[in-house]
Length: 467
Image 1: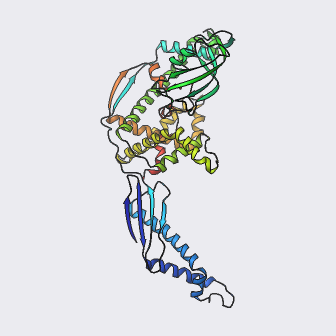
Image 2 (image 1 turned 180 degrees about the horizontal axis):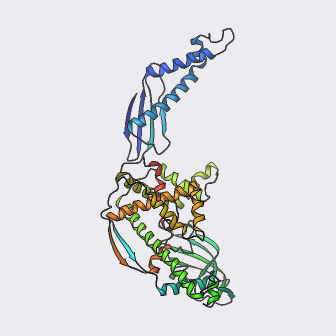
């Protein structure tokens, strides 16, 4: 068997395989003989049908079967010999088989280009230094008051701290976009459920008012497809409501299952929760910086087949994997790519980079880290031991936990070698990136995905390609 490999570009390879004529003819002959021993035909005893007649009757079928089997076997051997790992279904182009000639065919497919993760030592990471202060606790209690507010409709223009219920439709340069419209969306003006420019536009609108205006979304707006964009919004106001807030007393504390110790105990409980959130927020902030630094230092051209596979998986998780007519499949593919393409490419690239670091530097999962990580997750539940037991009995959950623990282990390895400086911060600054916008927030950005407490780890996105 002769094998040649041609690089069509960075990602595509064409493999040409020649199978010797002797091997092809021998296999065809063997199968014809085996068939002749089984064939029953009038005028001949069982197993005595002449080989020439068997060939006339079944030669084309036998030849097709032999060619199919030889291609499957020889392609497998050729890929092993050339150390190639196709990431897409190979496109097979067989040449016509001519008697006495070698059988030749070619296959074309995408591969993962070779790369080596670099730039670890030059990464510059800021580690936030922050504590939970009494003022932070005061602000949290105020947030809890607003969560317990009683709302009453009013027939006047909207003011700060009012809740306004609207329908909206948005367009960029006259074109709609995913998440461009919603009905009965509620925003509390001045409570960071929208950004200041938009809130200012909504101030003064009365119930049943209809208006439209342009507003420019901040560059760091978590919803990527509108970040930095000027969006034309059409607004219809359904209602305006004003809040009545509960008093801050022991009865207020009882609403949060604090029945002894009153406000002092509520503040102590809040401090514990906020300190835990702050620790996780700092870790998330650092992880995000590591991810950003690795991505910037290591651009990788991803095979489209791999990207499509990741997009399809994400679409399935979001319930967008639906049966469509042939004429609608391209439109669905474009929609899924628009919704998940950037996030899929980001997650795949990060997975490949982290996997490469772990493989090259012989980083192996520390089982103690898995146990510690499981304990830290369980601490947020009322019955942590039962939660741990349930996880340990769920193979899928444990797989995700192990992958996240390993991902964190690789990130810690990076931090030991990166340039890490400490920066004074506070609770609000650390936690702000974890907040989602209330408007046009249907599509969570790639960065926001990293903030969730138990999302699919980046490592798992490329796990099957790590060998």
